[in-house]
Length: 116
Length: 112
Image 1 (cartoon, rainbow over the protein chains, first blue to last red):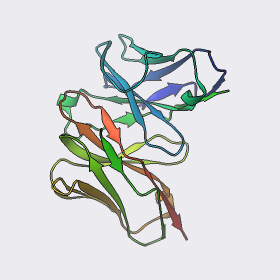
Image 2: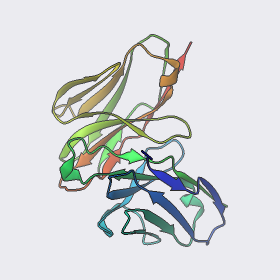
Image 3: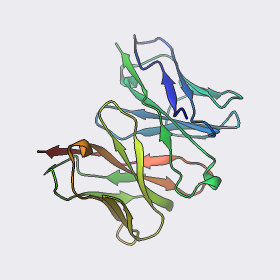
Image 4: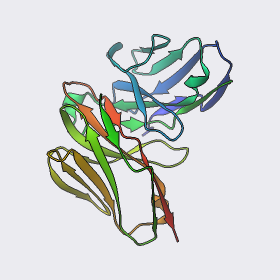
């Protein structure tokens, strides 16, 4: 049973460029969340997708956008990259919250983005 | 705002017991979770406390006191492989989502 897979694992961009990160959720999961993790810090919630719609959004600017496809996979897009966007971007999948007791998230290993 | 504070680093030796604390200032939440993250790896779920008290899962135990806005993760019989970062996290009301607010994280180093 494949877990959460993310691509690419590493990438380097320059300021002002745009990036697209991809995520395939764990089998049986239909909810995908994206988190940003700066070095030495805890993950910060960006947004969550369910039924191809953004359900909730964290405190991130509109430069951060996403999409969920009918097969539940998801993309995170970041436009007009800033140096401060350098971080590990984590995708997490889950079953709908109402179907779980713990709200356990299953994370991928992330995409490490470096902005020069 | 919501915040969960943890010590930045804890060190211990193999076989010992270590406690990682989490103090929080949040509005209502469903429960307190703990995640482990090895360097370069994905965070993985360890435990969840919906109610006050102690939950035990093998060598790991987790505790929650809502009245004290405090929780902790207890790791017993430490092994080298326990060297990792540990994060507490809460799932806030209201909600039909799994949005988690993570703590600042504690880096545990286990020495032989």
